[in-house]
Length: 282
Image 1 (cartoon, rainbow, N blue to C red):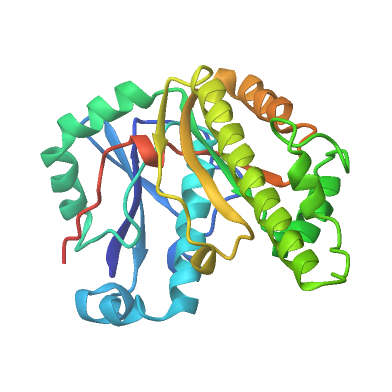
Image 2: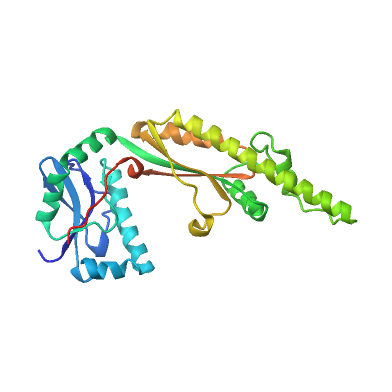
């Protein structure tokens, strides 16, 4: 079989068909490669793109990288629907099937320990954003889209946050101008404090519904493209059977707030809890 072996994830043996038949990286469907109680989900990729030298150049091509990441994620998502996968790093490639088997053999104890711990569990991501005056109008639109009540109480009763959303009155004097600036600054600070208080309370409540959690560094809006200041970026490990209750808890906690945006994503493979990294062969 010509070509290198791209490895998406390591699992226990499973017999269910993958939903939606994921295409896989380079347009090649994934297959299972079994070895001593473990399964590596792999597909064949061309050396012209995935050998060491061309891969280094390809990783600088953002369009190619995005397409590869989507294909990788599509396979991992399909696996998550039918089993518990341990996702490997993007572009984990080996020379041939024997190289993949050697990796499974070498790291068997790590994989089995991780699979024992994560079996039947999924990851949910929760982010909380504090909206700035610049994004307040966008927040109002998003809040209405998410079923929030316009003008409802902000976390902790943020009266000042409500004032910050109103258009400022034109100052009639220099003293009036300075007073308006002070009021706006105080309202902004109060909104930030209330948002951080809300985020702490939300994390505390969600942690009680999860088996484990990870607090990631807040995202830079310039890189993520998300509006507002990210004040909570957390991942929660939840039993698959408890996912519905976890999602309901998030919906209840974020109901009726303004000036704050709560983003829930998942269920994902347990990326933040797997503790495994891919290794490149060739």
